[in-house]
Each structure stands twice: as C-alpha cells, then as structure tokens.
Length: 353
Image (cartoon, rainbow, N blue to C red):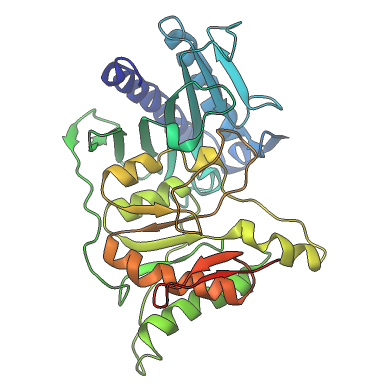
C-alpha cells in the first residue's frame, strides 16, 4: 500500500501542471518545425524536441520529490533502459515506489496543434521488475491544451477511493471540480466507438473488423442513416478521457494482433500501446468502466517501455456484454485470437496460430 497517497497525489498534480504549462507555453513560442524535430529513437518510441521540453521539467521536479520518497521512474526517453531512480544512486529493488509515466501521450497531435495531449502517471508499491499494471494504486492524467484552448482537465484515482477531477483555466488559475460521466446507454447504436487504426499498415484489416462488429450487432442499417460513429484520437489517455466523459461507448486497440499478418507481407509491427500509455487505466475502473485485454481479462503487463499491448474499454456493462462476444468471435474466425469462450454455448474455442 502506498503511504500518504493523498499527499503524493497533490505533489504529482503540481508536477503535471508544471509540465503542462511548459509544453503549452512552448506551443505558443516555437514553430511547429522546431517542436516536431526528431532528436532520438529510444525506449519504445520516437523522441521529438517537444518531448525534451517535458522531460527537463519532469526530472527537475522528480529530483525534488526524491528528497522525500525513493522511487524508480519508468518512462520513454530515459535512455535505453527507460529507468531512472530517485534519489540518484538508489537501489531499484530497495525503492519504496515504482512510477510509470508518459510525459506527453499524444505528442504528434499537440506538436501540430491538432488535438490536446495528456500527461499520464501510475504509481505502484515497488516489487522490482515484477511490478505490474495491476499493482498500480494511484493514477493521474492531465490534459495539455492546444494554444487556442484555455481549459485543461485532470482526472485521478486512488485505488478503492473512486475518481476525482478538476477543470482548470491554466491561464488564469481558476479551478472547478470535474466529475466523469461515462455513458450509461446500453447499446452502441448511434454512438461513438470503434477500433483504433491510426497508421499505415493493417488498417484495412482493422476497418473490416470494425465494420463486422457493427454489422453483427446492428444489422445492415437503413438508407441515409448512420448506425454508429468513430473518432480516431491518437492518444490512449485521450481515448480514456472520451470514455470517462461519456463521449465514446467502446474503444478497442488491437494493433499487436496484426504482427503475423504484417510479417507475412514483409512489414514490421508498427507503433503500439505500451504500459506507460495504459498506466492510468485504474481511473477507468474506479469510474465503473470495464477495461480488459482481448481475452476479457484484466490488463496485465510488467511496467516497462517495450511491451506491445492490446486493450478494450467499454463504457458500461451493457456495452461490454454487447460487444465483447462479437469482437472475440470475429477475431477467432480471423485467427487473430488464440482462444475465446462462446457466451451462448459456453464452449471454449482454441486456435493454434
């Protein structure tokens, strides 16, 4: 159990706000070409100039936090290992906490001023390299707004204590409470949702799966009417936010499943979700949403910068019950899912890839 978790949350919120302000100010002061310059390829992702801005603030503030607590920080951009200990020289196995962080989730969207990005942090008691996503007991995500946007939202959770939130005018400092309101609509009909397909490589397959899910749940539809809608928000934290605030009803990120298909075509697996992208899923669960892996189990992964992860989020149990068996059966038929359980017959299916 994390000791003095409420105090730690307050400290992390201040760090998030410092990062947010610095990145947002840089967006006002620097040209897109400067912020989008590639400076490194390391620890799970491409590092841009805008990432360096956030990392400088991060290290400064975490050094101060290290005077009070010992912890291992896991984040992209921290050299080839993606690890740093605070205070400096701490034995990673002896530290009190293990924190995993994405200083800017949605880098490409914010540096081109297309869409807000998010700062993500999850904190777990330190169990060394065996520490996993399920061990996270405190999570926080903070919006990095566009230059033309004055408001910035933050959402957080301490395990077993529900969700807190705040909407802040980052220019004036004015603050108001914010409560997530996930959709309680029992169907995907006429709502937003779907499968992530951000980049070239496998998008045809992903779109086909998306269409099949809607077809099997809603039928062929009617002329001149849209059965459902989608929104490709290139930020996992942003996707979480859309689910939490009732904007989306379900989202599935299946990208790691495409590796065999891409390999057969002579292409490598591209950019996927990593544990640092999913480190705030505790907020989703505390808000009553259903978050699973593709087999319908809780997300489970070591806290590293390399693991490629799939996930599915459902706004409520009704959407979960409507979508999951259909999605799993389609993935099974396409030999993308190795096993699933048919909810109608109770029969378990296994596939050898």
